[in-house]
Image (cartoon, rainbow, N blue to C red; front, side, top):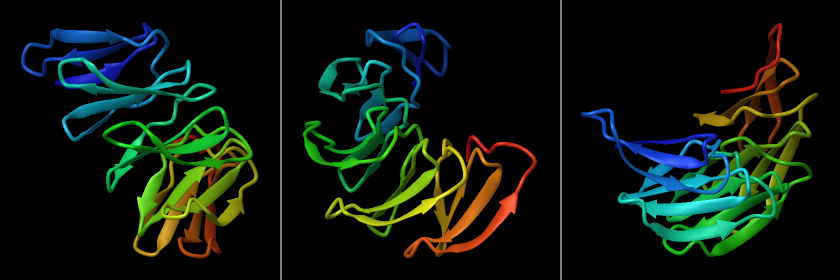
Length: 193
């Protein structure tokens, strides 16, 4: 199956052979995050702030509720789901139960998909800040300020973190220290990665 969310409030399970909908799950709110498929389950957030884990038949395994919408797409690393919210919080959720392992308070909402590398989590926020958080302690390691919103998702390659900003620059940072290595100016906003 291919799983897609929609503004019609449904997560659709589309059969890849027939192109027909095998089932749909009404989440009660638009689904704007890209679903994560992991451990035979589908994980996704909604505009209302509900975050779901469904099995492949569409049955709810668990539900977590943030205070505001979740449009960030989730990732999983070592049995933990990481997802940002419009309530200015990054959540670490236990994959089997949805229990909150930790919360990290951001200064502003996050719509980026986080990434994890060497037990460090990287995410951006609409205040233009790129955060580095230790996944073991939930403590901030460093932060780097761009000149406008960070809506695209950061990525790590070798020892560098790359992230675009609505300020039109692609930033290359040392992933361990957050030190700027270089930035490449474009002629328009960078809203994705």
